[in-house]
Length: 142
Picture 1: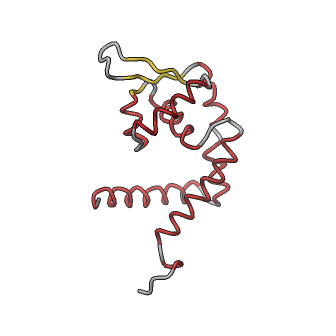
Picture 2: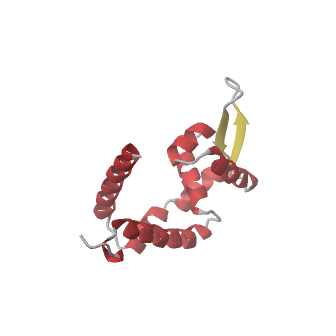
Picture 3: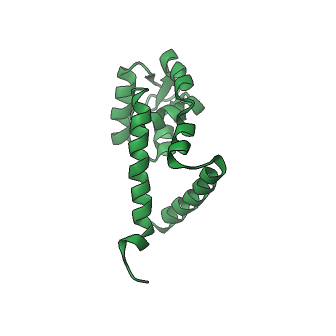
C-alpha cells in the first residue's frame, strides 16, 4: 500500500483528537475547566473519594501531570486532598460541595460533543468500542 497522508489511520486519529480538543475547549470554558480537569472531575463524580494513585491509573496520567491539575482544582474550590489515615503515603481526593454541584452544570457536555461530532449515541458507542480495542492492542504491543 502506498504511504500517503490520506491513508494513515494514525493521522485521522490525531486530527480527530485535535478537533475534539477544540470543541471541548469551547464547551468546557463555560464551566471554567480544561479538558484534563474535566476528566479528573468525571472520575470523581463517578467514584469519589479516590486516591491520587487510583485517579492516575483511571486517567492514564502520572503523578507529575496529575498533581498540578489537582492543585488547580483545589484552588478553584472543586476538590480537596487529604492524607489517608490508614496509609499516610496515600492521598485521597474528595469533591467539595461546589465540585458536586458542578456535575449538574456539566451533565450536557457529552451530548453537546456528540452533536458537534455529528454522532448519534449508537455511533459514538461503536466508535468507543473500536477505540478501546485499539488501545488494548497497542498497550499489549508496547
